[in-house]
Image 1 (spheres, one colour):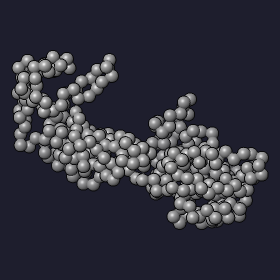
Image 2 (cartoon, helix red, strand yellow; image 1 turned 60 degrees about the vertical axis):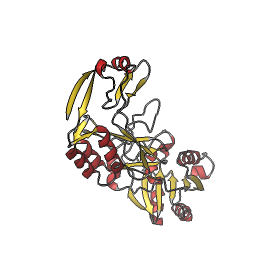
Image 3 (cartoon, rainbow, N blue to C red; image 1 turned 180 degrees about the horizontal axis):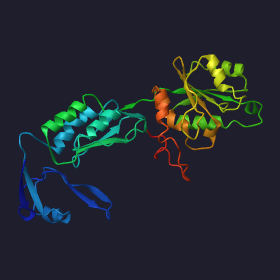
Image 4 (cartoon, helix red, strand yellow; image 1 turned 120 degrees about the vertical axis):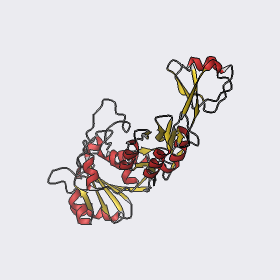
Length: 340
């Protein structure tokens, strides 16, 4: 690449070689002030000087050179998977990616890291397994220098031989809730789980259809569970502590539920337990979830509703980032809690 330096006062008729950025905190503005390809006029000169452009560089690219815009335009279709859309044209060399739907954001962690390890590339994303809303930004791509070699682009294309980011739909639309506890069954204590679970499910457009309150009795819990076996998502609340009379897990095991593991490392809601029964996902939610705005249930829920199969290793990895900061004002999910 050759660069010819031209004083801005003599640059009338020349072409802007790349997007020129203006940053003005006072105006609350940061963006492309002049777009690539714009032909400079006499009226542009004071504006260019106001953003620190006293010289214009005329670029003459070699055959092996790739401009930042072409690099982004070539690679971006390979980065985006299902339910992801991206800018038709770059701005300041950057292309942004957004979700077309409400769903669960997914990424290929190893290849995202590999792409960003090339030094010239920048592909930041939001966290894996993050619940997203239609139109929400997921990632952005650009190269850091203005020009890169075609060999660099080819290497990036080889990494992106299949999509690096995508969004899964929430597959579950109806759910059932079994509330265990003799104190609730007898009416001594009001059921607080139903409004809690119903509210959390409604955020994902899931209807809480089935609902029963049962005593702390193995056979009664098993019977209630099997009556709801037609549902793809069954929440069972209470009866999951270390007390000998908490028999919920035993009852569900008798019914045929296969648990990934009993409990999880996330705090709060260590006793949240996930299992599977044929095609149904089963989630035991401990009473601690009533007290906190965000718990292990909130962390796991988007994945469960997308029917994203969770493994024993997945649960163990939540230990890192799985300790809530217990902030005075909870802003979950825009916080580090539950991010792996």
